[in-house]
Image 1 (cartoon, rainbow, N blue to C red):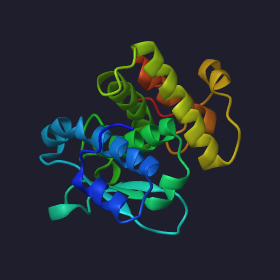
Image 2 (cartoon, helix red, strand yellow; image 1 turned 180 degrees about the vertical axis):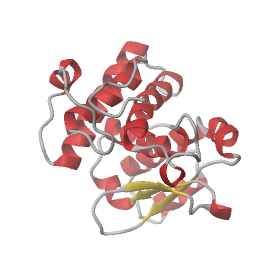
Image 3 (cartoon, one colour; image 1 turned 90 degrees about the horizontal axis):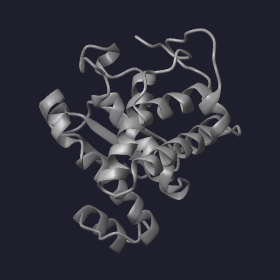
Length: 205
């Protein structure tokens, strides 16, 4: 397990709220947000806060402007700590972070947040950045982990089996500006990870 540097994580661990494995997950969340704080300050004028929300509700995470002084906040539901694989954790947090800083014009999109397609695309780039800079993975390995993380996350979300390799090479018709198919969402994350343009199966400005 990586070194636990966060006092919050240590407090949660010592209180029995989380296990050591879940403490590692919390640290992953904090590390991902941490390496993007400079971008957050530049784009939003302040850093992104994190809240671990203890709940029995369905596993979830969301981005909002309900942080300190109405600043950007990622709320990570405690139920996610019992379900996610490591690559899922990365995808979930990167997607939510993408809502805050993944738009090309932060604060000028619907409700001030990046749309779903933008957030998915950002998630791929975010995952690769984290895996190569913090985990010291090779670029190709990081791109593969980003792909499998999207596969696992959206398979769980949509309660369906998604073949990551099939989604990677699949061609989709039409343009959807709101919610796309699970396969399209996996493909969007993968395109972000590869540094390609967003796929045409989702709104591609």
